[in-house]
Image 1 (cartoon, rainbow, N blue to C red):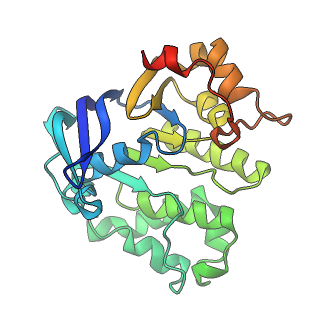
Image 2 (cartoon, rainbow, N blue to C red):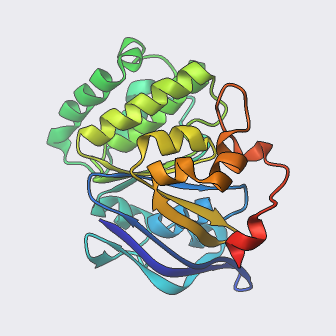
Length: 261
């Protein structure tokens, strides 16, 4: 279980970005973390994975625990070793390396004897990658690159997978494929913290959802209840005819003051 309590994060010692954020990801669950650009979602992930210092950020108050052990003081390699994997926004694959090489890089903390077995698992999960395993990753489509980024993170056998905007920039059909893959990964035993602007997709597969506004959690409810909430439906779920809600389309926040009060 991941437990974040009263987390405050500052950048460059002056910019307060997270203001007492508390989040839980129970073992075996999918939890959605939603919010507009700049709400603090990626900062939450950086705090979990030990990447804050790279961006001149630091935890000022609060705690982050994984399976009961504090981790907010750990750097990124040590965090991966605890069993946490992350797929960053933008995929961040190595375009001049083959698919197979990208995946093997993801196994740098895994036992050598498990690498081949993990490769077989990834290629079973993503058959399109198996067909092109010797191809340079830069020639993959956006959706295939996202699959590769997820597969690379899974090579370290994480107990918790952090996904930052996995549907960003993908066609609706590919978004559906990514959605189904997240569910399958979870069913295979990996917990998931899903950061998304596609609220409809995220809430359709998660058990619980948190909504961040200006560094604070303003809504914290089971996903089924959030999907029926009048404010959530107006701001996040009813924005496009095809039903793919995006926070980037939100132009008016008539009820934000009530949420933030």
